Length: 219
Image (cartoon, rainbow, N blue to C red):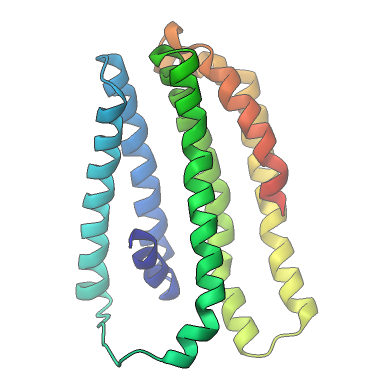
């Protein structure tokens, strides 16, 4: 539901609001997770923090969409032909979401079972950096999406669409490459100042994952 609201805001080209909400979520999540870890709270508390942040930002998005953008939801019945034709795509998305959820959870579960809560905490701090890194990369491509959609609807040629798709990849490579290099040089000192020496191994977790994500962000 949160992504649907962000999509409506992006469709109206209010990128400052949508990206601001996403950035605010990342910042709040990062600080609250580190705070909870510093007072020895468990994984359940971290999930609760994620839930509260998501609920608050979803409520704000609802207010913005309905009161500021004046978007009205209308029910016109079910289009059976459209439902049948899109059923294959919907099942594919459902399967993808299931796989993504399993993939995003299996690493923390395995670490908790095999190495304990300390390893999960170190890994979680590294993932905070990686999530912020991915959010920056995805923000560039998502800004281009409404413009690309309009071009396709207006009958743009394949060459024009391809050029528009390549452009975000170039920006992503330059920006993400620079972030990766800077973090590789100074990330250990940054984490030492931010969360302390007990999470020093989070540097290697974050750096390895950032390098692995660099090529996919170019595409």
